[in-house]
Image 1: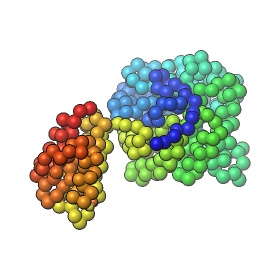
Image 2: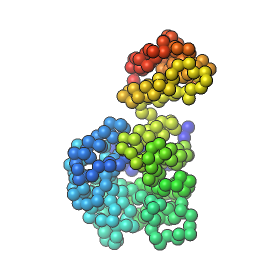
Image 3: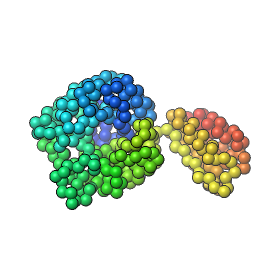
Image 4: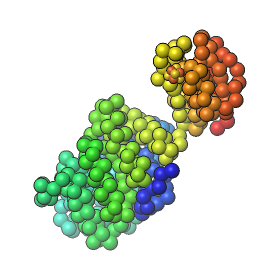
Length: 350
Ligand code: SF4
C-alpha cells in the first residue's frame, strides 16, 4: 500500500490534481496548435486512450486564439504552455484555457506577471511552475548540486506567485538525469504542499525513453510523491499515455484495461508461447475491461499464475489448460489457444 504525500488539491476544469485524487495522466499535443482540426483529432485520440489533461504549445497569438475552437470539440481540460510573452498567457486565458504552464520569472516585469496572475485568479485556473534542468536561471549558484539549484529556482517562482496571493500552483522539476530528478522531487516534496507534476524531460525514443521515464518516476510514485505524470517521448503522444498507465498500473495506483502476465519461456515451453502472448497482447488493446490475463508456458509456475489471474492458460505439450477465476475450465489444443482465451475474456464480466 502506497501512502501518498499530502498535497493541496487544485482543479483544472472537472479534473482534480492533488489531495485525495488519483494520479492523473496527462500528455502534450504534438500538432501545430493553430491547426485546429489536427489538434482536436489528436486530443480526441488521447482522450480515448485515457489522457485526462492535455497541454498545447502557445508560440503566438493565433495559437492562443485557436484554444477557443479546440476547447469546444474536446472533453478534457486544456493547459496552455507559455514562454516569455505575458500577452499570450492573457489571450490563452481569454480563450478559455483551463490552466497555464509558465514560469513567472521568464515573463518579465512585475507588472506583467501581476496581470497574468490576476487574470488566472479571476478564472480560478492553476499555473504550473515548471523548472527544467536545461533552462535554469543563470543567477542561481552554479556550484550547488543540480537538485538544489532546481528547488531554489522553483521556490523563487512560488514566492512570486504567493506574493500576489495566488496559490493554485502545481510544480514540476524535470531533468534528463534520473538520480537528479528523483533527488529534486524528494526535496521539493518536503518543502511545499503544492501538487507535483512528475516527468523525466526529453526522455528519448522508445523503448529507452520508456525505461528512463519508468526508472525515474516509479521510485517517486512508490514513495507517494507525484499527483500527475507525463511521459515525454520522442514518439506519438499515444505512446506517452499508454506508458503512463502501465507505470501506474504496475504500482497499483490506477486501473485501466487489461493486465497481461506472461512467462519469459524457457526450455520447458512446448508451445509457441511468444507468438501466442504477442497475439493476445495485441488483441487486448481493444478490450475495455480491468481484467488480469495470464499466458504461461508450462506446468511449473503456469497453473499457479493462471489460477491467480481472472482468465489464464497454462500450456503443456501442444495444448493448454484454460482457467477462469481460479477454476479449470477445459483443455484446449495449441491451435485454438488464442481464440479460446479471447472468447473467455469476452465472456468475462466488466
Ligand atoms: S512458466 Fe514454465 S515455461 Fe514459463 S518460464 Fe517458467 S518454467 Fe519456463
